[in-house]
Image 1 (cartoon, helix red, strand yellow):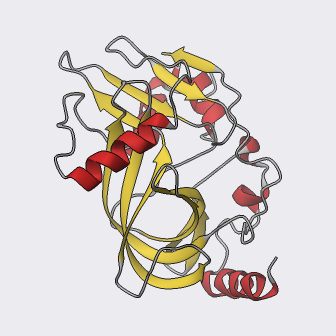
Image 2 (cartoon, one colour):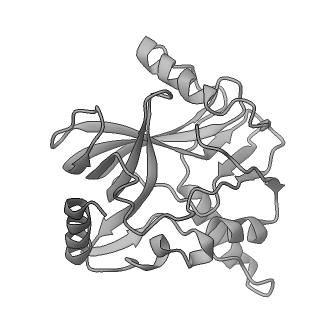
Length: 248
């Protein structure tokens, strides 16, 4: 289980929180309307269930849900109907290259067809799951069997939850974004057998022949955020395939 350096922030000051997340902070002189637009855009990438979302009834899904929840026990979070935005700082991006080939068990290209957030059984953590229709498998050193058009469920820390009083709590990792349904991505994935999950390390959206990183760590100065931002898709994939073959 990865080690966490936790800094929990329950914040209602949108600019400060968004600034740590990789989304540009708002200048105090900026129009309130623009702040509201940026806040809504940032929130919209996170799946949103109700807090009373039924537990999985399928035994296999229920076991996986509980296994993922156990990973976050003793973190110290408590997600309630009065929680603000919860930012959990980790060191996930330290030393990570723009193309984390050796750090990934799976690298796939595919379209996200579904997304949902889950609150753990102890209501102390939120994570989101994404269903990916696989178009191409670029690397696979895992025990997962994948072919073209396979359906793959991947997850990432963070998400939103709505309480009966209408309050919405958002939890996120600064610098990390979320894939969106209906869009195509190259995803770098880690298989965590003990937690029965396939975790998103990072990813790039492929849109209109260009490349857009889903993550923006280190205030936009990290290689993940800069090296392939708006790069040509063909050049990006050529670089990636070369890195995979060379084991870089």
